[in-house]
Length: 272
Image 1 (cartoon, rainbow, N blue to C red):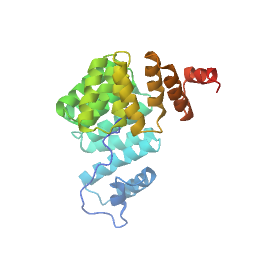
Image 2: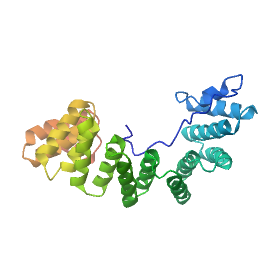
Image 3: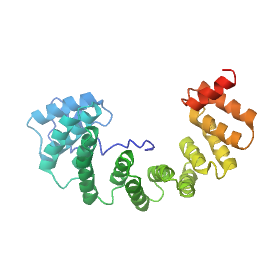
């Protein structure tokens, strides 16, 4: 599930099984499970072989660009994506890849233009909508991000990534009842999703602390080494006047490595 707002692009484009170079480089270039440095090396070998047709060359350039982003060479990735665009400018994948590379280089305005192009080429692509929404959210455009996640939910009303990320964006926009509704819809299909319980608890906190506490405690049970649910449940308990229970939860959050200046001060008050 794409719960991170650092959502991936359209990586790992598979290429036609035609005229593979004898050394197998094209196969490694197209292997989704291969390590990024190996993909970059073998895509370059495949491209240098002179044995690729147009579609294979496009795929190799696109996968090379994705691999170069992964190994933190976005400037070279841009060159690969531009070579792919020159071959098949109607395909969306290299615009998505170039947008990611440009963002890595802090060229945000240019990245936004590529996301616009990607959305115009594939307006009904769930992946494009999710990734474009994540781009907007990372760059502080909450309203634009929400529009993309709304579009993603319209494409697939039950998609967990669309619901999760729209829920996070609604929390960022302080639209807590709507965020709660999205996480509730997600949990109907994924009842063991610790992250969905945790963020629904965040959406409920302060409005329905009993419900928030139940969600935080469920998240802690499902992911017992995750410190945030323990910290948030401690706060909910304290708001309800259960100070001793709250302190137990704060201690557990601290033991699990939760980083928060307020928590450190609280633990010191409790005697360490």
